[in-house]
Length: 166
Image 1 (cartoon, rainbow, N blue to C red):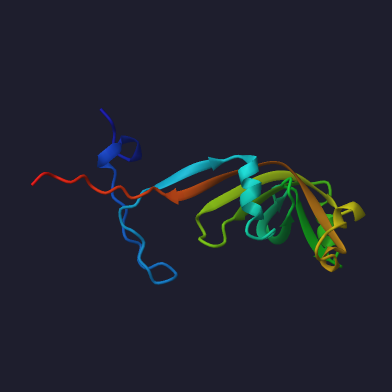
Image 2 (cartoon, rainbow, N blue to C red; image 1 turned 90 degrees about the horizontal axis):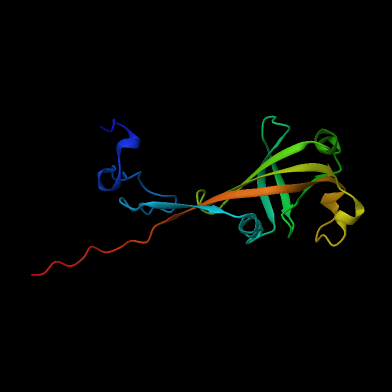
């Protein structure tokens, strides 16, 4: 016999979604929509993090410390460039440390989340070459991402109920 709780619910006996009130734009969220979660590959994570802009706000945790918000530039290979302006304190704190980074979809707040792990090092002149804005990158770090994974959530398409014969 199955016990009570989430593990016991299957198929049609799962509770229906509840109305959480109006969204930011005043529209109401659909009440009975199911959400499908998809695991994202490294390539898909890089593509999402780079679009529509290459600059992204992110949360970064250095060696497991409390996450701090940073603005980063996402490169084509998934590495992140983090400007520090003229303040070298970020470079001193981060250089040579393991970094875990979280970047989220800023438009919907729940469309996708990408997490990654990498190693931070100070920016070199080669890192700064070809950057659109170089004054913010007087000092900074490059996070060489070892791997990126993510989850994308999208509402499942609404399937109409079958017509019943008259």
